[in-house]
Length: 142
Image 1 (tube, rainbow, N blue to C red):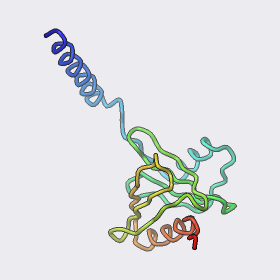
Image 2 (image 1 turned 90 degrees about the vertical axis):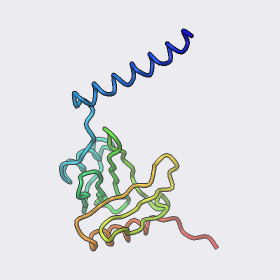
Image 3 (image 1 turned 45 degrees about the horizontal axis):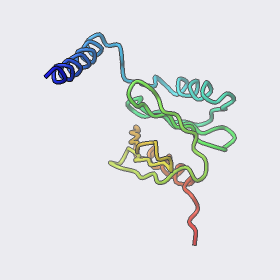
Image 4 (image 1 turned 30 degrees about the vertical axis):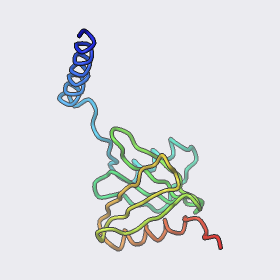
């Protein structure tokens, strides 16, 4: 019987901590404010990242920034209170498809990276970046 009290008490204690955290607003979802913020984060993660052309998702939850040398594309995606950063090189993109006109559904050849949906301002912007990402798919073997 005491084991039941221990389990119920543990569940109630953890639930209370989660509710207090949400009520105080301690853990806010991560967002990017602009492309400069995304470029700073990429440079801090990989010193020497030289940002070129980029695009910020409408909701600030993602950004794509091409390195000026053309070697890779920096990807930032908000996941909870953190940002997940990936440097996309040839062979790292499984597929990038345009969904709902102005968003991209992106899957990587990285089993720990869950598929992401990047929403942009226009359908043209989504199409342009989907094409750039598709170039990074692995070559088809015959």
